[in-house]
Image (cartoon, rainbow, N blue to C red):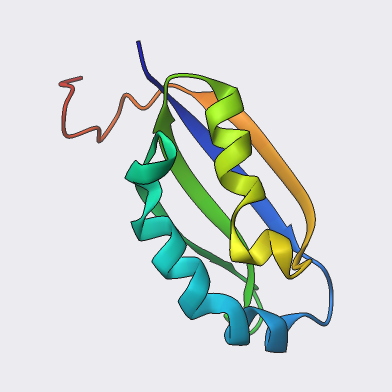
Length: 103
């Protein structure tokens, strides 16, 4: 049985140029998620409150096991580029707003 996982990733300071350079490869990788035993349900950059600059990533991934999510994240071009200061993966119960579930 699959479940949802929320991924919160925070960029290292001063990495905006790296983020911009690697972003096309990162987005292509997310679109190939089904080949990695996960499904990216939603995602996008987090933004700095003062100037809307991208400063992290939020993803919601569906997978059978957290190990599948971790393997997928380790293959992400952002991870290879060393963009993130911190990455947190949490099991998540998508209830409100889930198009497959009525609440």
